[in-house]
Figure: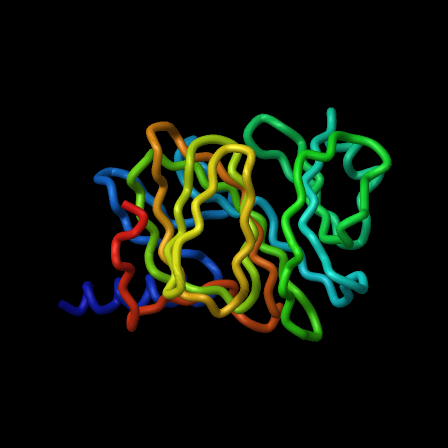
Length: 219
């Protein structure tokens, strides 16, 4: 019993400190989010980068996704709100900037926004990749800032108290902060997605929600 209590406390500490602890919906699949340096399998949720910044550009902001032939090429055009990561066999430049912003080189893949960003003295940008087969369900949770996602392959469905957001390959979505959500991978193929959680840097990026249950709209 003491071991079980300690384990539950440990899991809660991980969740509140920024390591997202989803629920396991399919047997033998670990859906917790780990630093990408701890990757042990293609399947899973991995934190690609977690930079902090004190100032953001003015005006409505969007998350821009660009690909480059090399990391050095991406770093050469990075701004103060850009992050270079490697994911799904490509080099990405992630940039939070106004809608009209474009990198001088590279391929502009997508942009999601506008992002309803909270006022804060500093901001955290948690960039993740999530690769799961259909039917995987995440723990009900929320973020203190917007969550933007872009689906590279497969399908994802997010249920909130106000409805459902479905995205397929080549589509993106934005949900505001403090919205309770339950995510499930749907469709018939492996879901691959890139995710940004932009939040007040003094708060953890995610917290569990226990007083709301999804109605199963994402089945």
